[in-house]
Length: 120
Image (cartoon, rainbow, N blue to C red; front, side, top):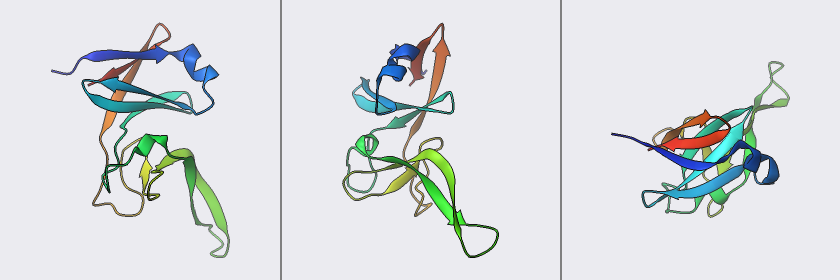
């Protein structure tokens, strides 16, 4: 049965320039990201070659605009790129952006009285 593990207080997110906090829970490194006032947990492990996924850049995605000629930004600050080989994953759901056969584990995150917990 999963249990809650304390990660940090919400105020700690305001002092980190990285937009994430990486912690160890039950022998696994899990990163907690804050996106649009919501928290999301992701395993710090790239399924490609076991790189430290959550130490990579957080970006958005792009798609062709409705006019068919220009590009538009989407999902701003919702994509994590592995620093080793740039495999990209959706922070909210764990799916690989470039190949939907792959995904990384994600974790439920709860906030209570300003404290952040990962359920694992």
